[in-house]
Image (cartoon, rainbow, N blue to C red; front, top):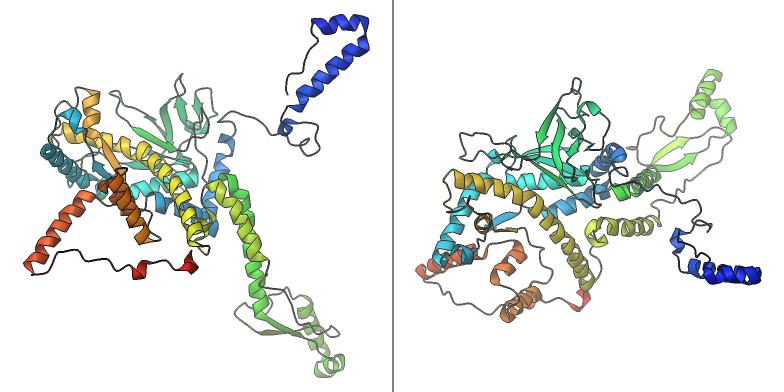
Length: 527
């Protein structure tokens, strides 16, 4: 609560002579002080009186809910269309076919000529492809490095965090020993499920500065049927020589936070309720489509048609009908006999519900911003104007670039550094002075991580804009190529040169022809 004013010397002097005046002075200053406070901090307003959330530290607020948050998040990813769509959209756009490495050494600092720089780039990228394109880079030998990128991001989004171990394993079919082992977050826990301490939280041991120095990793997943007799291994975050042994990937949102929370955590309740509502509406619509009409049997006819035993059996069966007795959803147009004396009913269940779509979409418009996914992208529903759709895609692409930078910085870069060190130490890449000076090392290992482009809504306008950016010097052909489709400009030039030679050899003209833009023009209806 805001500090209230206290009596000063003048107030005390006035209080001796005129206590009422002194009281009014204090009362007025108090009212003035309170008038400038936040209503959100009020404890007296009826709307805020019963809202008193607990304020814990970064770890207390999340660690004890992590297990159920992870389980519910994964269930939504598997069984709730919107939950799965949100995670898929992020993984597909951030990683897509993978973040590829383009060597970009500091040639000026290293004193390289253009020819030497180009040769060094080709050598580095060729050696990198030997490792990253092979499934040998994966401890389980299931994925190449691009597949591991997608799996790491997906696991982080679904579970909150993921570990990547970096063991060195000798291989017969690959010259590089570096391998990546992804560890699901559930396996990171205190040995023997011991209680947390001042220096250990949820399997992570911290030093006096709050930096992670060790990780307790269970050999078996706690949800495994074979988890009985589980054992733990303790892995140092760094080796004695400073080598990175563990990469802990999570989105840190508070200082001091040790573990990550699932991507869907803020909207888990809303997504589950929306999923239940959708299922209920779908079931009601199916029942409405399957039922045709209820038919009443005349009482006299009932008496004359059935013997006493048959009547009792018929009544018993009808009375016990729960909506599914002798009735399947495959029997469209089903006719059901009711008990004697009941009225004829033509069921009007009001399905499909005309109010379902507006309500459903309104909820998604609340869920989307929390996940930083525009409504149009979340639902893949681009029915608005060209300008509105483009604005949504551009907004989403800012989020994609941020997450892509996160993956490049905290996942790809450390792994690239380990690989580069091995490549130089084994003699496969020549880098004089690499181990002598950190600045020389950084000059050699400088790279650019390039992912898939955002696609194009209006190719003609976007190509024209790219030409103008290059013309005025605010962009380059290399940047525009990468932004367009994640391609490599130098590779394009080499390929264009080959194609030109082939066309000339075949006697074909290589002169550029004016572009027919008729089919690329956006109609007024689309804008």
